[in-house]
Image 1: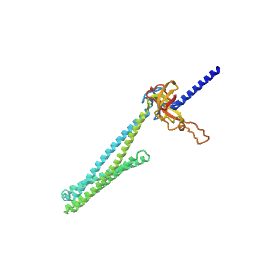
Image 2 (image 1 turned 180 degrees about the vertical axis):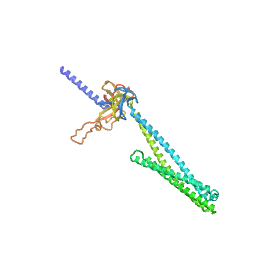
Image 3 (image 1 turned 120 degrees about the vertical axis):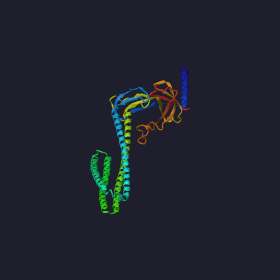
Image 4 (image 1 turned 60 degrees about the vertical axis):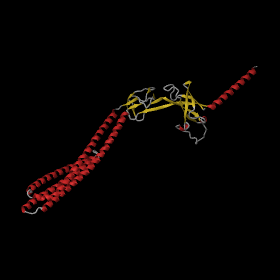
Length: 424
């Protein structure tokens, strides 16, 4: 009787084992399973973009924060001072640019006036011959006027020489300062231009003195001829020639002023570039000032806080991390032999070790382009030494179903889970 019971029990045991084996075989045809899976989430490291001392930390570990919340404040006094300095440099550059524009207009007016005077002098030279016959009665008066004109021209020449000496001193001083890098190169260029302009004025003054002397001699000769009864035709011709020389001198001076206009325009272009540079520096200074307030890049929970008040932080130094609990997914590492029928879009059951009684629903989102070992810090080198074949694992990304409760809830990045993918 006992032997019969043992046989019956053995039969039931064998049938049960066969049934379990059949169920397991059928289930393996419809699903794949792995417990090498973990919850993953977005982790944003917060670091400083500028160096500075921490004056305020507004969050603590494991605190939930919304996106763009101010979490750390750096000492902004140095950066605020730099911003004010940049703003002052912009104002200086603007004034220089305006002054350069004003100087261009002034020199253009001088050049136009000088050309007008040269044209007028030419007309006077042409009319000198005609007016010579009408100067008989006023020859003596003309002599006195020419003497006064000569005295004025001499005074003008002496003043031009004084200006030339002062311009030469300024040029020498500017070159000496430029050689010591105490002034900019444009100061030397300006002094050289001033020296050339003053030299041209001196040349014109000397020409005017010579012309005044010739006019005086002409007037005296005219007076003598009138007294002697000679014909004044030759005198008128000499006067016209002298007027022509004076007109040519004024044309040369107008050309020098035109050259100075081009120099002033180059200075204006330089000041415009300096203004642009100052504006860019101001924008950078204001941006650095904004960087003294560090905000959370996204909503989530603060973790790995490694910053305290009074700490001096450097650029790129990790200060804390923000974990976005509202956006988590599962990475399941399946054996490469299990992936033959796995496709994106297939349903998956997810069981978290922390909550084994709750099943989360999800879908396969994608399969990694390589195995985990291939992208490790030290990938295997199978071509060296003895080789043992090891079944590799491939990460599969699984997204939680939108019907599941959203975080912040039970799931945290790094939790261990078991995943079953339904192949049909």
